[in-house]
Image (tube, rainbow, N blue to C red; front, side):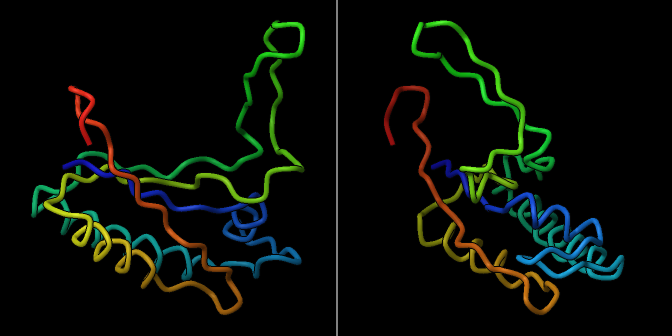
Amino acid sequence: MKYLLMIQGTQADHEAQSGKATGDAPAWTEQDLRTMYAHMGALNNDLAETGEIVDAAGLTEPARARFVELGPDGRTVITDGPYGETKEVLAGYWVLDCVSMERVTEIAARVLECPVPAGTKQYPLVIRPMFDAGGDV
């Protein structure tokens, strides 16, 4: 069964990872980033070896995002980020092909073990089963 494992973040988190502390997040050092990338790289390598990883990606900062929606008149309205009303957004994801929700939960716990600077907010991960091509979960 396929699952989408999502990690959340904010614009402040992206700025902190660029070395700019904010009221919400401490500045990351180059070593902090290397440590995070090493942890995530090892996890992705392990998932590749087990054949469970289908796809994975980190996303750019929310300030580079765009909302496309219909306005009250039915016309398309395009808004560039960042969005003041949006607190947490999708920061990255994994598409995993695992035998059970329990296995995906084990992987999520391993993601949460990623070393981060003291004071960095930890967000819950979201796991969503994916429909298969036939519409079944």
